[in-house]
Structure formats: C-alpha cells, structure tokens
Length: 89
Image 1 (cartoon, rainbow, N blue to C red):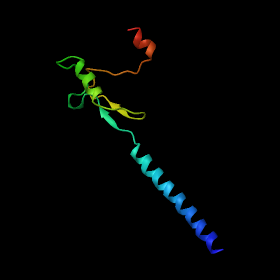
Image 2 (image 1 turned 60 degrees about the vertical axis):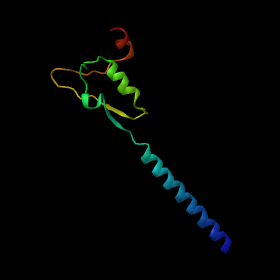
Image 3 (image 1 turned 60 degrees about the horizontal axis):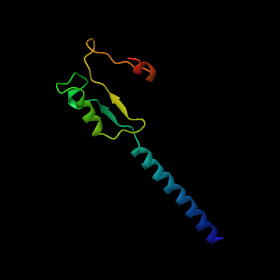
Image 4 (image 1 turned 45 degrees about the vertical axis):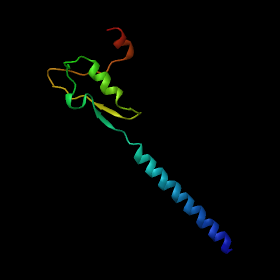
C-alpha cells in the first residue's frame, strides 16, 4: 500500500514537471515584433532597397512574428495583396 502511494505521488510529480516545462517552452515561443528597417523605418533609403534586404538577412523570422511598418501616414500607404496581384504589377 505504501509503495503504491509513493508511485502515485511520483506520477503526479512527473505530470507537474511536464506541465511546468510546457509553460516555459510556450513562453519562449512568443512572437517577436520587428520594426521593418529598424531606426530607418519604412522609407525610400538613400542606398536603395538593398538596405531592406540586408535588414531582413540579419533576422530569423518564425511563424507568428509580427512586422511593423513605421511610415508617414498620408504620404505613404501599405496594403495587403495576393501573390497573383503582386506578380501582375
């Protein structure tokens, strides 16, 4: 009887450890917010679009990350388009 109680307590402890590890891993998997171009923002850079290619190359993006486009409202715009619409430009 004593041995069974100890075994049940160990099972409970194992479940709690698994839950704790899952919580830590989920917290680590939070999305990251990136401001496109960092301090430059979303502008026409003096060096051309290569600046944005270099910016993107230094980051590792994952699913659920967010991109923030810092631009001057009224002077610039941002629109979501389909791949087909983009390809037809």
